[in-house]
Amino acid sequence: MSVSFHTLRIAEVVPETAEAKSIRFAVPDDLRDTFAFAPGQHLTLKADIGGEEVRRNYSLCVAPQDGELKVTVKRIAGGVFSNWANDNLEAGQDMEVMPPHGSFTWEFRPDARNHYAGFAGGSGITPVMSLLKTALLTEPDSRFTLFYGNRDSASVIFLEELSRLKNRFMDRLQVHHFLAEEAEDIELFNGILDRTKCDLILGSLIEPEEVSAFFICGPGPMMDAAEEALKEVGVPADRILVERFTAGRPDAAVEAQMHQLQARAEGLQMTVTLDGRRRRVPFDAKAGNILDSARLAGMPAPFACKAGVCATCRARVLNGEVEMAARYGLSDEEIAAGYVLTCQSVPKGEGVEVDYDA
Ligand code: FES
Image 1: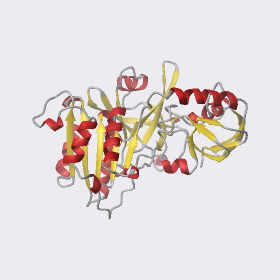
Image 2 (image 1 turned 90 degrees about the horizontal axis):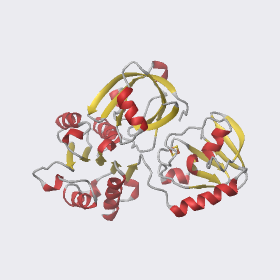
Image 3 (image 1 turned 180 degrees about the vertical axis):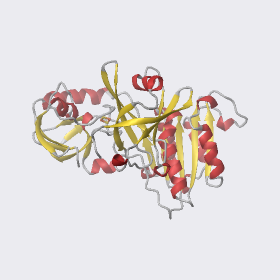
Image 4 (image 1 turned 30 degrees about the horizontal axis):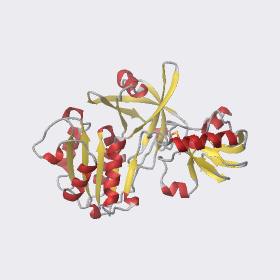
């Protein structure tokens, strides 16, 4: 993954609901390969807001076949970037954008005959939309079932697009809306996607053992409910893909342990490779992690959330051992392959070597 930002022009801003807008970027020919993406991935956007550099990740809501680069930004209460973007961004403006990344994805193959299912809540639909469209466009024999929770029908992002897709892929796409504050005739579809609802879904609307992959993205409690319900009925972990945008509150015991480790690691020498440059960097306890120690030393190591969710700061440990406070953004395979989230990592001894290019 290229970790540097590029300037892209906004080609179009599309209002999706009263609280969400999609932003389509124009990609110049010489950056086409750089901005090629896998379905479900996200972009990191960077802006100067009130004199401060703010970075946020937003999922692509399109399939690679759409030939567009488009993300959707929903306002969140008190959200610095999301409110600024909804109020200020217009076609013709330039924006700093990092190339697509993220592991909430799936390799769709034209000869596959699969059934996929998505659990999405609110703006969590964006990466699921990208996966859903790609599945239907790439695999003519595959099906997709979507369970999509929202407050009311006015807040449903992509309501019309989903119904267009349903008409186009009549036999292969099923969409079930769940509305928390609007009553429907069928009781099952009233209320939020909580654990009870997920259990009912798995008992009546879908055969979990027939599903090749479940894609889950939305508010934390919804994701936990769906994941737990799936595990309860025996769906193996490698068929459950979860995309988190926010981290839960750190565990107090973990936090205390990390403070101790940070203090002990002060001044430990590390070797950091970024964009082909290899440098010695001391660990800085005040910075608190490898990412910020490298940045303090003048290396522009990439980041977005600094909360262990987005994996923008991912690097591979080539030598030594590190301790990670949170690891939401990494899959078990990545951890087994030696990847860490440097915004969450502290060296456990001298000579730790991390490589952002690996
Ligand atoms: S910056 Fe998001 S996980 Fe580290």
